[in-house]
Length: 303
Image (cartoon, helix red, strand yellow):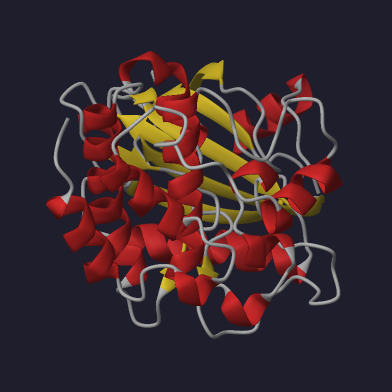
């Protein structure tokens, strides 16, 4: 169930989360409403005085899919001890209004995370148009994603895109929005007979576009990284011309092979070959191991 920022929601949050002051609302994204808040007077938040600003995420719903995604994100953020992901400060599920003690129309899921002092990659594209800058970026992203890929069982982000990558002032990356992370080898909560799985179409892998759950692995994130690098260097997405509908974009992801960047004169043959390999349509043709991709990136001359 999609939630919207309304006066009624803000009034309810004020009753549920006393002392937490909403300062701004983030741009709409997914099924949640995201607020930037001052926690100074919210003494129920652990160590509330150490946070100048926090991120409040609000979602609602009773479907197994909604509950599963939210619980998974909370579990993952709680277990990650790395500066490449936001720190989870607080989480709670509410089922009734404390003022009236009446049940809510649906469960309300609350998470509070640190406000990362960083800018979205989507707003910093101009800093990542050279081969050297994009090469450095993908190296950092691979390092940041490794805790997910190498966890037991492996976790797949499935939504790597410029809006979900934050860049700190020192150039380090932070990855956000783990809402559709998939546990490799575990039955998902979406219908296998669906046309496609959870994704942002123009950054999705072919196996996501086909909802081919058995083949979704860290190699699916490889493909998304390749698409991201291609878009930064080329200045356009290879699967979305901006005018196509959703199904056309997904069809392009599955069938259209992007022209090598080296052939377009946009980067070296070495880096172009790496991007082409991780953007292969069949997962088995991509790098077989994370260490293989890492080694190829390290061996790539910096230009």
